Length: 282
Image (cartoon, rainbow, N blue to C red; front, side, top):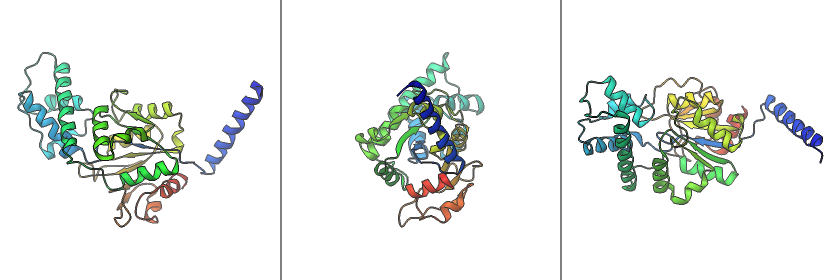
C-alpha cells in the first residue's frame, strides 16, 4: 500500500473514531488504578505505622497518630510529607544539615518497614478489587497502575495480596520512581497514556482522594472514586462516580454522588465491566 493510501486509511479511521465518540460510543480499553487507599487501605495501618517505626529507628521523636496522619495526607509523597510536617507543625527538629538526604534515608527505611508489615499479612485488598481485576483480564481490558508511591511498595502489596505473578497482569506500573512529580500533577497519568498509546476517552481511572481525582481529571480521564475513612466527605467535584467501595455480589456499594451516579444506582450493586462500559458511554 502506498504512503498516500496509508495516510488516507489513518485519516478514515480517525474520522470514524471521532464520529463514534461524538455519538457517545466510547470503547473501554483500559482501567488505571491508584494504589494507596484505592486498591487497599494501606495508609492508616500500613504507611503511618511504617513511618513511625522509621522515626524511632532514626532516633527522631515524631509520632504520627491516626488523625494527624489524615491531615498530612493532603501532602502527596512521603518525603514531601515529612518536610511539610517539620515546617508546619510544632515538633522536634531533626539534627541534620542536609534535610533532603536525611528524609530520603528515613523514607527508604519506612519502605522497608512497610514491606515487612505487608509480609505480616495485616492489609488486604478492598472489596471488589480482586474480582474486578480478574473480570478485566477475562474481558481483554488492559490494566495499569498510576501511583505516587514507590515501586517497592506497589510490588510488596501485589505480591502479598495477589501473588508475584500479578505484576505481569498490569501492562504498566507507573510509580514515583518513574514520574517524580506527585499528584495532583497529572504527569503519572499522562505517562501511562503515552506509554500505552491510549486515548484518555477510552479509559477509566480509579482513585480515592482529591489529589488523585485532580490528577486524573487533568489528564482528561473519567474517574471513579471509592472513598475511605480518610477521604470520605471530601469535595470530589468532577468525579463520574463516588462509591464507598467497588462492591461484591451480595455486598452492594453505596452511591455517594458523581455526575453519572444514576448509572450505578440502576446497576447490579457491584462494579463490573458491563457497568464500566455503560458508565463510559452514558
